[in-house]
Length: 477
Image (tube, rainbow, N blue to C red; front, side):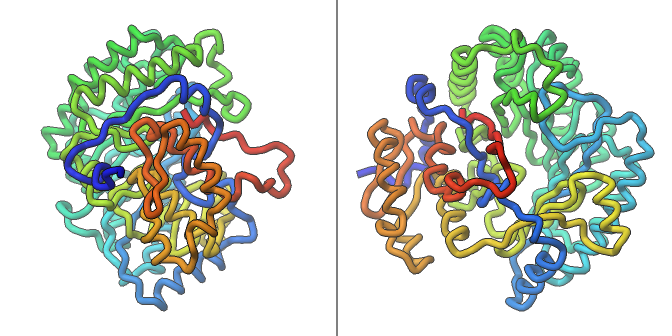
């Protein structure tokens, strides 16, 4: 009998690295920041359908807390590895125009959600949010506070992604005063040759100065982003980068797999494929990172996230409050996600909705007095069932079959008979254990959680309308 308290109890479970199994099962697959995934959103879902979803919440007198995502798409320079929705320009006047429209959208969303719940979570992403000047950021935060009812600083989680190359020590302190209490730094790699190969020169001293300033300013959590599989990376260079990261002692570390998809992301065409580590070396790099970070006391949260045992992310996982959304793992499981800005995706009620992906389209919709929703999806009961199931597996590495049967009018064994049959291959490889009342992912299976969740994704076997070629996902490992 497997100990079901292990993944949420006080004893932190290990994650096991099995190169043979990973090599056998590595394939392209979704990251499950949503289910259904964004490539299933439909153009028939627009502004009207979003308003219906909000009206439904108001009718049910929803008092769920609010989570707000703000997308700032601009960057000063291009990092060759990047696959984000961004606009690279040194013309900062474009940001002023964007902010005018962004505030319009914030006003509209603020009125829609007025009186419906406190805002307990805010995340600024991009692009580079600190592309905005200190004055612009202060003005935008004041506008947000006028439009939404923010929870107190000690209760809310207010985070921003920053590029250490674009902020001074003084700016870090200013961000804290403006209301941010969590900060995430893009590092990727400290090795000078790797940095040159991806066009991101970022001296270690510069990054450490920002981290030290964040601690002095009283930020509650400091997170560092790393990428493995970049050009010029080696076991030696990664070992040295990890030494520096562990010495910097961040609260969280996100370790992303570099997905080389130059046909999708134009900047990646500047990376020489000859400089990329081989698949075997890439796996060795991942194994090294996991081993070193776990030895340094970090808890493996899942997918590509590590956190200190006392960090809110690790605490939320132990308490069963962890969830995944479009920013990755999140501590606020029961909240409505409102997203503002070009290409941003909201999750409201039983719907997902995405904004226009171009500035022109975004501005045009707002000029018409409409929210810039361009596509989305209303979830059916089957979607809601599978979304909960995938969330539980991604966040807790286990699933109570009884709790699913209590929440939905199904017999699990009958409804998911095909899926349970497919899971037998994973069980044979020692990746999970299926019992009458539980599905439990083993430490060996945790790195392959995307593969396991794909078994429950009914859309993967359905062709996409109007698409001759299947959408390319990143590798699951």
